[in-house]
Image (cartoon, rainbow, N blue to C red; front, side, top):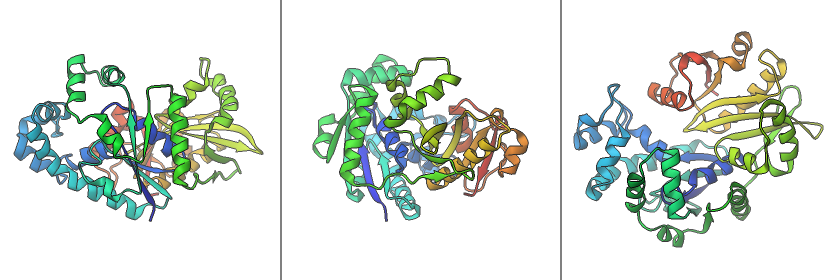
Length: 354
């Protein structure tokens, strides 16, 4: 059974960046907020109880619950928030247990604002708190979530003080500084956990893939500068690592390729593979490695933009048209995931059953 690490902290404190850094190092990670959202998709267990309590007028035309509308209700009414949590929290806890039972990694990480309130901390081997200044969290909410300043302060003040979570945690990370500083703090915490590093993955051509780490940043910059018209500083790479997985491919110790992949609630999207061309055998080999990576992270589907690969190559790798209905994937989950990444089903290929 893997170790379970809990990451908590108040809204916009930087929890997701820390979780992503751990995912890059081989941890299987769970975003409890996305897990909670999955419980109230149409047809799922929390859907009808929420409508019965809060009314069907909180739904979009496709039947999905409007999270913004629901949020305005519960963030202004502590009793309503407790009722919502009583519906959702037990399902989230069961979902975490289901992941632990299937995981074949050394470390599973769950990110949850309500880690203590939901009792998830009792299941954890260790708990980390992530903290940031209130003014910085306000700015993040306004810039990344489009909230007004008043709504941002409402979200911040609706939660218990950050110090309460900090005092109950085994390790505290501050994200007030640079991305590099947050990365360094995360690595220190990871060393304390004595977790096994991510396993190397080897392509059919012998290219060895492992997480992109600071020792390879110089070589990565040289490769990135050939394809993306900007000057890449170390901080840019640390920032990129805070919201996507980056695998570096090596031949005889030399960095030869970079593959970027977004993993979100057991769905994966290949974002870029450089320097290989759409019809090349090398690209097919890297995609096969990314499919292995998706399987390690219990992904139910791997999406691949059509513009990235030749149709024949995609077919040879076992990819299907993106509109294909998948077993064990809620159609709205996949549609929402693709939409969030600026894609539609007709713009991707998909592979499942890892």
